[in-house]
Image 1: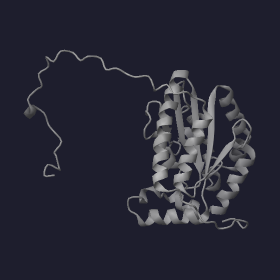
Image 2 (image 1 turned 135 degrees about the vertical axis):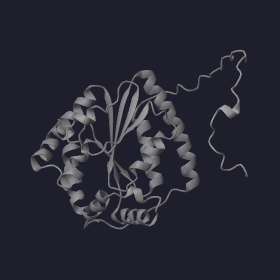
Image 3 (image 1 turned 180 degrees about the vertical axis):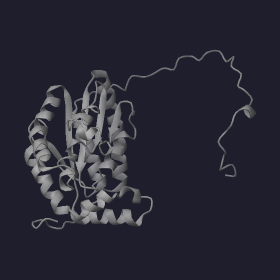
Image 4 (image 1 turned 90 degrees about the vertical axis):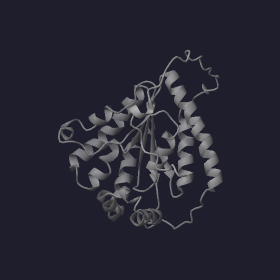
Length: 270
């Protein structure tokens, strides 16, 4: 924690309320995606923040009921040897939305201002050039018609510690902890300073940062989705009733079952 931070008790959102609201908001996300297709909108949503802050869980809830051909996730691995010689933003540009698409960046070009800088994967000149060019880059995106939303998921020192420990103790969650995640915990102060410097440069009127208080994952997910819905004015286009066309006359004869190979039923006794 920072020297001026105070420990606070997190008020957890009741599970029944969370589940009811999530279901309602996911229906609205379906409405939103249909509107984005109809109007040919281009929506880019960036998810950044502390490790274990809940970015992945929020992304998962957004895409859970939506069409992956319309709402897709861009989660790039570390750059290849060739990509390291390209213009820094180049590999991210390839992932930007076309008309009728929503792209969720699970980490983004802001890697340079965070993990790359703190861990020494870029030099000082590359870092400073990013801080200079990023606001201009994002202004170009906005001028081109892209709706750009940037989320920063903020989690307290104590809550991150608890979540890391939970991942260490739970074998089903251990895959979420990379060596880089563990190192980020050791460099909490360095990451905090880097985040503050990044905000000072890139929290602009054209593309502001929206901070999500993520100590309560349920609240964070719902508040994030609510903000996405409020960022793109849309109308409900899903109310039109659909009618199934009549099927062709049934003249089809299925091949014998023993000519096909079936997956074994492991639960035939139940």
